Image (cartoon, rainbow, N blue to C red; front, side):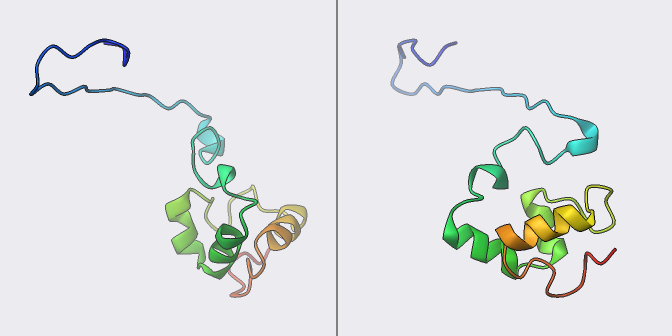
Amino acid sequence: WHSATVFKGREGQRYSATRIYGRADHYWEGVSSFTNRGMQDHFRAFIGRLSARERALFRFPPPGHEYYTQETLARLEDQYPGWNARGEYDL
């Protein structure tokens, strides 16, 4: 049922089934995760303070993933100051 349909009973509930599609090799893309908050100052500071393990909760790739290069690490440090303060992403 579409959200525009009218409920006929007071005890009714509307259920929704959704699917998320994305690339297996870029699993952090294609969903509403950190990408839609990346320019918010408070979120940038928050992410910069986290450990690599904590960042995984926000769908960031783990250390050692091929995504990380000297260029991406430099850009992440610009975006999230303190990104590699613990040296977890050293190449």
